[in-house]
Amino acid sequence: QVQLVQSGAEVKTPGASVKVSCKASGYIFTSYYMHWVRQAPGQGLEWMGIINLTGGSTNYAQKFQGRVTMTRDTSTSTVYMELNSLRSEDTAVYYCARIEVGGDRYFDLWGRGTLVTVSS
Amino acid sequence: QSALTQPHSVSGSPGQSVTISCTGTSSDVGGYNYVSWYQQHPGKAPKLMIYAVSKRPSGVPDRFSGSKSGNTASLTISGLQAEDEADYYCCSYAGSVVFGGGTKVTVL
Image (cartoon, rainbow over all chains, first blue to last red; front, side, top):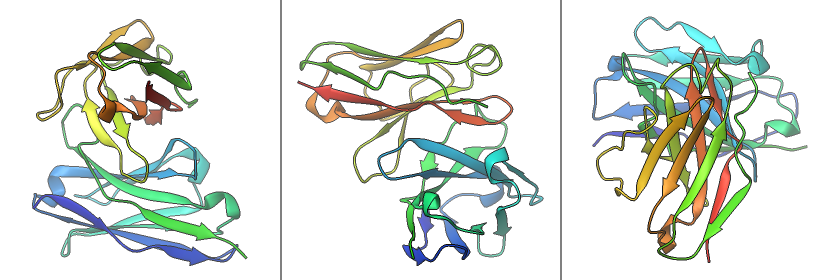
């Protein structure tokens, strides 16, 4: 079954870090790029960045540079997104979503999302 | 990169047509055909409805269609149905990914 399975909800205090995982199955892992997109409560979608699953190179949205790290483990077909120095504004649902390498640059598969709550 | 501009909301009666606009610049929407549209129901992940401006994935009803003119892309829902009530987001992927602010579609 083609799917992206994300880790469970997290509650963090301000200043802490969170690491969210996204495990891919049912397709060739390296035939796609993986992106992370977040959505604050009642707000729209916000792109965070992309990781090339073949070589591991990354490109982050300027807003998150210096605070986000995306990594992958090809042996388990899992992608990770770590966000540091959390603040209340980082409370959001975090989605992983794939884009086919060499395709028309659209997200054809999304994870169900991981709710990260930042609160003291 | 600034977010793409969408109307906050549109509405229509069952069977009617509604169109959602998505305005960017020549550096994103106007310069490339990498425009896609996503439907999102409350509490759910986004779902791809249109890609490459006007292509429809298998399984998406043909009442959903996309187009582009200049720096503005559009999503049209013809024959509106109750299950179409949702939030819709446009997306452009030029050098980086940018989303529209989202449009709430209400079926009256």
